Length: 528
Image 1: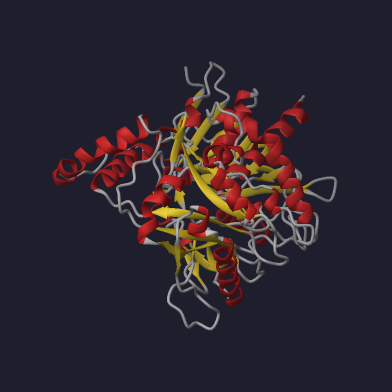
Image 2 (image 1 turned 90 degrees about the horizontal axis):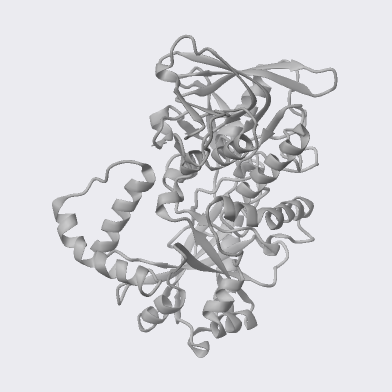
């Protein structure tokens, strides 16, 4: 029996005008769903508020448009989804922890990274177990066992191989975690089509302010007040920053620390292909580094530099296989619909032409434990590098209002000449380390890399991994402390990728989940 109560604010009865809970969580994406379910399982009364509908929609559909001051930032449009599951309705499901590669003693944020990594080490087994992975933590040992001499050859050249885990399609949308909350206590209520609009904040007896309640509204004007002892923003790096900025703008006294900079230092991973696999090495690349399956989970490989270059941005590289077979496209359509919780939209021709190739995919998956890659499939080496922290890359409030009467965000973001120079240098360095055919590895044909002088061909693009907007730390500009409490507010915490100082050498979701689990433990300890 599910312990979750579902409320669509658009059609909620007038009697549903006030709710009370121990915790109010804003945002039903990865962090919000994970934290809500863990708190409910521990016996707390939780209200989870989501701006979007039951299924995932883009930001424009839910009325969360953004304005752009510099370059267009796709992470705020194509990379942002609302509804139950948030961006997990579309994401690839990559679980990769930040590692010791991200901790650099000379880094400005070395202490913050050290704390983040300690939480990741501590919480990794719990996160994997709660996401139904029943193996052991093997992000670095899996490549050593499967690649053996290849991994050793790469290590001798200064490259460490890391393995990522990819959630099975049936579990990629983390809304599935809500179904795991069982029992008769009804500790968890999910209110969707409900946009956070007004915060009732009062000064406490100490310096910090305190939130008493939150008013949420629907498109049709229905509203609901949620009163809770603790509030947690899990609304994503952009929307969480917007909410904090609006809190600051709407109160005569500072509710955050006066020097905190919510919205500033917006960063991302910059991604671009840096080399093509030579035609004579295509089969070898697929054999060595093509995705594999382990106990129902897909595994991929990525490459990290073992020696950190002072002041160089963190980065990682991985092979991409341009599999465009009709069977692969059919499988993507079917599984993507499953992830988005909708019926697949397929044409008769697509079904007819793709069904035969589905056999190859099934055989590869079930018999060979590999993702089938057709012979001759082109592939390339992709580099993902974190942007250098830059204060003027930021989220700020515009004077325009959205359909809910809230101030819209303006995003000032650009890829700087320093970023272009850094990714070019990182690409050259990595390709110089690659041992190639002499070590039995694929031969690579370098591509022209974007340079700061603008003479080239291909520029990097963002990877939809926004960070930095609500940065963790104890310095004057930090927005949250190491316990994820917002500086200046007694009962507001924040869990989003925005707390990371920079993108680091990994996709940010797994690390964010580790921080959410740590926060759930802290709350449980405080309530006992």
